[in-house]
Image 1 (tube, each protein chain N blue to C red):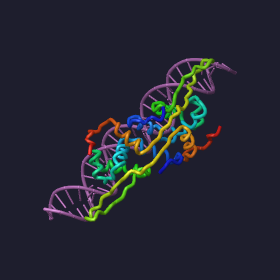
Image 2: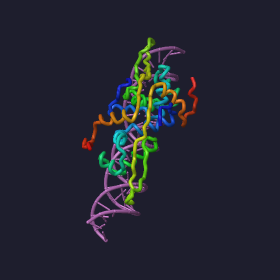
Image 3: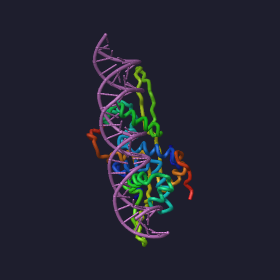
Image 4: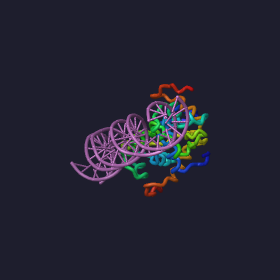
Length: 111
Length: 111
DNA sequence: ACGGGATGTCAGAGAAATCTGACACGGCTC
DNA sequence: GAGCCGTGTCAGATTTCTCTGACATCCCGT
């Protein structure tokens, strides 16, 4: 995760992952502290299943890492933490990314 | 539109506006050329109503400007163009933006 | 008058994202 | 065993986003 020019196919999911208040707050909460899921749910006042969904999207976008830790007492706790990243966005970057978009486009875009 | 630190309430719509293949391609098409709507619809192979919706979202996010020009021959044509911008995204920026999120949050986030 | 090209808006179908409650499992402590 | 606290997953309701076809309007040139 760094400042390399993103392709369209990886930029869209990344932006989609960030374009949500909950997920911004989740990331913000994980910047400093490394927390486990249930505690995070309490801190952010959201249902655990909901938090799970958002965490999965963040994880899928590579913005968050999860680690299932089996504590010495035998209980398992899943710690999550934010993955540092940098994204410089710009009209030129977007124009570049748009060229690398695959998908249902006949590619008769020229002219 | 520039590199000032965005608040959460303006960052989320901005990211949401960008997190779409169509809108990336629309922006890319408007970087160089200034085009009117119908022609743009042909260039990108999409229905005009659909293009309109995406243009409205881009306009709402401040990424695109529209100008309805009444040509000398009397016909009116709407020209659209991309608005230059810069966005530097970062975990710290996100943490900052998350603090400025208004909304249905009891704000009992402390501790 | 007619056809063509432009703007703008609508209703509604279809797909995807969001959110909630309930369930299953395991391990600890009392 | 009962209660508490973790993880993980599910079905389903609700909402939002996408997308299409059709319509109304205006101006121009033939």
